[in-house]
Image (cartoon, rainbow, N blue to C red; front, side, top):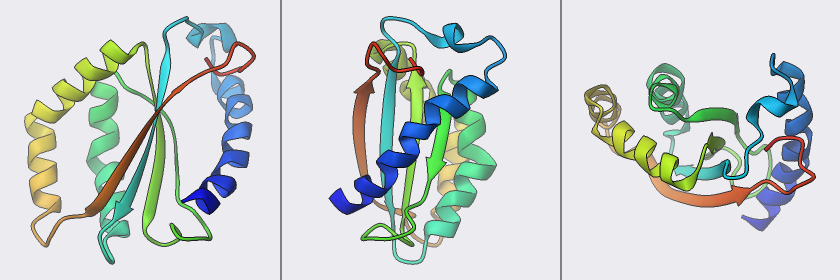
Amino acid sequence: MAKFLRVLLPALLLLPVAAIAADEDGPEHHKGPERVFEMRIYTAAEGKLPDLMARFRNHTNYLFVKHGMDLIGYWTPTEGDGAGNTLVYLLAHDSREAAAASWKAFGSDPAWKAAAAESRKDGRLVAKIENQWLEATDFSPLR
């Protein structure tokens, strides 16, 4: 995993520049003292990464936004241990409390329950989930 993070971190360093450039309201729009970021790393079950990505593409992203989560980005490692079976994504929340409320609403949403059940009909898609909470530094352009 350490090798994978060495590959991912340079990409994350470029993310704030791209996010600010795409933000119509400018960099001040998202700045706030409590905004937190959540990095999640999903290790797919054997051969299930395409199915996992399809579930995000076709269902999960919409539901994240519906429940107040800001989508920052999604990545798959191109080398190392995670290549071919790992999905990494970054979400932003107004606070840890807002994140907890969003995840609770997401988990109980009938559309999520249906999508999850349908995607698991041929076996579980995810073998392991890792979660890391991140706080932007005072010099980060993406806060």
